[in-house]
Length: 128
Figure 1 (tube, rainbow, N blue to C red):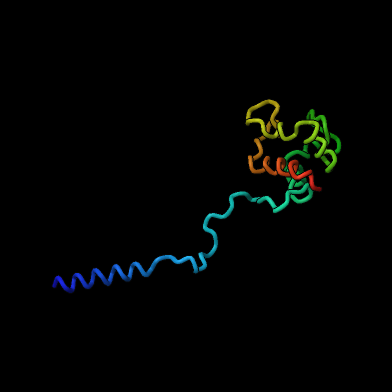
Figure 2 (tube, rainbow, N blue to C red):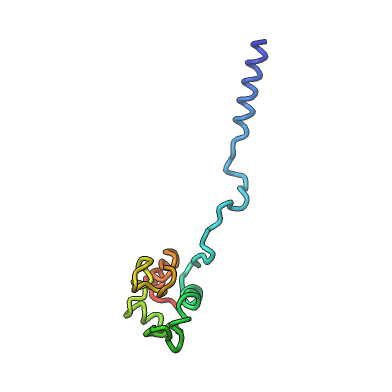
């Protein structure tokens, strides 16, 4: 009986060790996809990234005619670039929630991943 038990134990060890997950098989779809609904493209440009953020979060006050006490328009590439270079746009969107100078005013702070897109755009030379 012991011989059969030993044989069975050895057979189970060999069987289980042969069932390892090798690196050659296709793991299938990623079970944890990127939570960012707007993933950063390879190159952050005004057209493919920044303009979309502006239109979704800023243009209601910073349109061609600013409203709600907004002082500048952000409706063109040149105006957004100037706002980053001269008006502290990145600093304003980077302020903590609840700071009275945070943008969007009276709104929710942009996700850090979105703020990082503006920083990348600036660091890469404001690609249009």
